[in-house]
Image 1: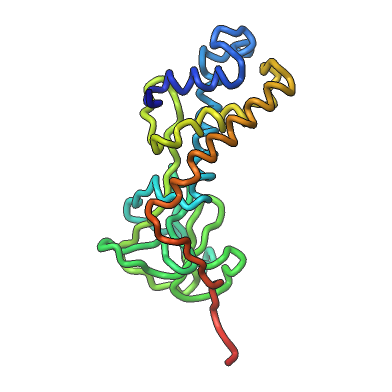
Image 2 (image 1 turned 90 degrees about the vertical axis):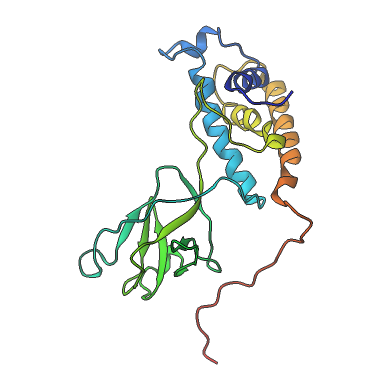
Length: 227
């Protein structure tokens, strides 16, 4: 049976941490039934997303609405736009811009935040904002290509996670909850959670390569040369 419903993920979390939803400790501070489970499932899902993206997985992609810009070079040292509320990671790099025009053509070059004094058609990320370099000349409409955060969990949440990797969600959630006082079992429980996480990650690891194409090694970005 595949993991599809929120209740299945909740039960998987409780099995790993050796708990039941009826445990008084889980509602001792006024929490509703299963609230703690949903909190850790949300955190665990997003930890799983980051881990899979680090392994090369290319899912959870979308394009933002047209970006709107605030500020000027003279008043704020550049113009900026707030990142989407569900932003997880830009789908781009210093070799491939995450900013695109309506037809998908990339625009600009990403630079490191420490290089924010550069000028020209480039951009960088600062906290939850996307900044253009000074003297940038963007087209009238730009979009951000990015990986989005999985929705927070509740009883009605629909899972958006590759089927073969869904065991990673309760495993990551249990790992994050492993320092909570409500967990029974001591070191044996912690060892069980650690084993479950390792197995889940190993099963999910291969999804980072959707084809037999070999991994590509890219040279570091180079901005100028004295030769």
